[in-house]
Amino acid sequence: MLKIAVAALSLALLTATGFAQEAPAGIKRTPLQKLAYPDGYTVMMGTAEIPPGGASGRHTHPGVETGYILEGEVLMSVEGQPDQTLNTGDSYQIPAAAAHDVKTVGDKPAKALATYVVEADKPLASPAP
Image 1 (tube, rainbow, N blue to C red):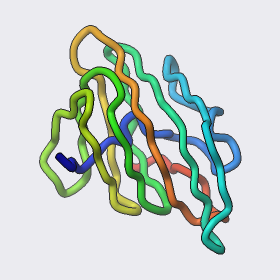
Image 2 (image 1 turned 135 degrees about the vertical axis):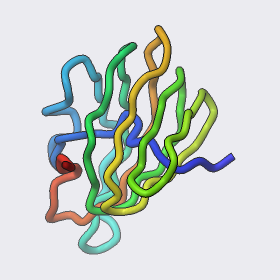
Image 3 (image 1 turned 30 degrees about the horizontal axis):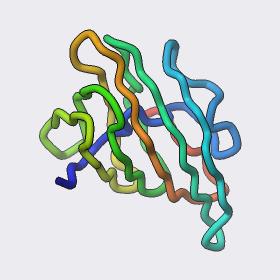
Image 4 (image 1 turned 60 degrees about the vertical axis):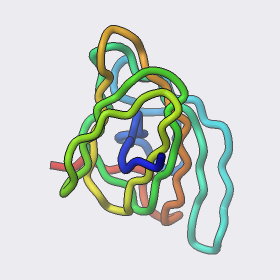
């Protein structure tokens, strides 16, 4: 079932050239692929692991994010939509520029595979109020 949300473990406060840098404390990011395509856009794929009690922090992306929860359970908050709980095997989509946050649920870590299609000349993520 397609679910909306998950910056999940989204890459808050990262730049398009620094997928694994500036992650919130305790969050492990692993870049897997980066491609300049189509013209003016960057496609990035990676995993994000968030510990129990952790959160990505409220942020936005200058393009769409889509992904899949590999492990664990998270609470997704996307601006203008009701909060959703996503479990292992759930997929998600986050519209461009939608403020969102993700938090682990329970006492186990969570892990997501995320793909971003973002404007090449902008940071991958920016903090949202």
